[in-house]
Length: 186
Image: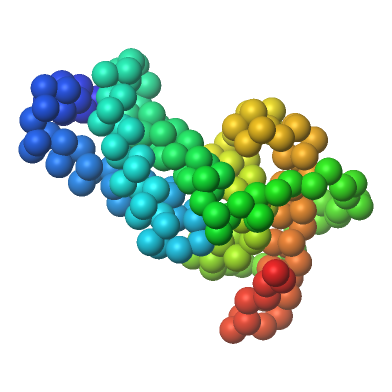
């Protein structure tokens, strides 16, 4: 942590080498965060760049008590959400309906997936489902927080999360029988 404090102080003094070091240390993992919310690497890179502009602009607001990486991650997630809301190609996919859900079984399919396969299945979810699934299951936000972040109700967040989960379970079940195919419905 003391290494990060010195790095932050140097960044705040405008030292380019420190800014480069901060970027190089966190960019690879933060690109992964951004990629979880977008449908292309190019969009993820755009979000990453915009996010780091915000990191450097608001670095003086970092309270130095929590983990720096967690603070940067929060900025990246918020930047990704704003990007999705502003981007024409994601606008339609972020419409959340209030329809009731049918009961979903709690039984999990007994399959073994590696992290890369699961991440690819999550990326195939429609953008709205993918966004909420990532916020809840990956980032650990509550449905209340997700609702506030996206301007939707807590129940809509829960509904969309359960739909995403159901779709993933369906795909995993279908994929386990045929490892070479990944099923997606659009």
